[in-house]
Length: 316
Image (tube, rainbow, N blue to C red; front, side):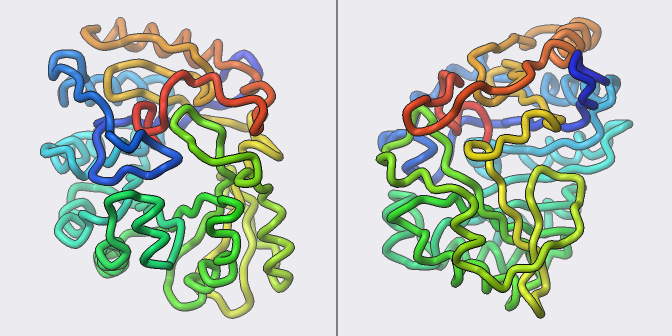
């Protein structure tokens, strides 16, 4: 479907839970989130109905997110059913990776084609700090399991945080030389749960400054600016929602675990679809897509996101 600004909207991110087994400092509060009533969250059938409605409007790429989607007990069933929806050509999933040792192969068998794994540091102490509860060794095991499971693509997502991991840009980039995976550096966004000062918001150009040997790579249709280290097995992508926003080519909508459609991550606008039938969901989606805003407005350390929720509540 084409929105009012001529953008073809073909991508939906579906959050299946607000819960997570980690407590990353830029994503959620230290105490976690208040667990909502079961009846306030989308059921599995409602999620699949929403995917069907979205597909009928031209959504062909679906990403499963959370919270941490792998803590959802019925995640394999959700993935299997979503992958089977007519019109869905690509099913992806974003995870912190810690539960992949047991679930990587079952996810691949359920139809997940691509995995994004969050990893902001290769230092054990810093990983424990940023995640509050996590183990780097467990995350590394998850990445190994993902590579062995045969996904079409495995990407590592690293959020750039000045004073925290900008000294590891080179070390993180080297992963693309050692393993057949892509690495994406993502600018830190000023979200509700964030607890970092102004110096943490560094531009994507810091990566180009630190990695002078980077060579431009062929675009893949995504929002990342792609580069490659000589002799590497994968690409390095730079994603800049703050310093060089890509709103003009944004092709996505989001659906939260409690059934709210968000036409833009940084907008407070939300449209409920829980409890609706297929035609009603389709009608709401049609309006949401057509009226998707032109851009998210000024976004920086002094102008925080208007999302109104932390990332775990929206879907990372």
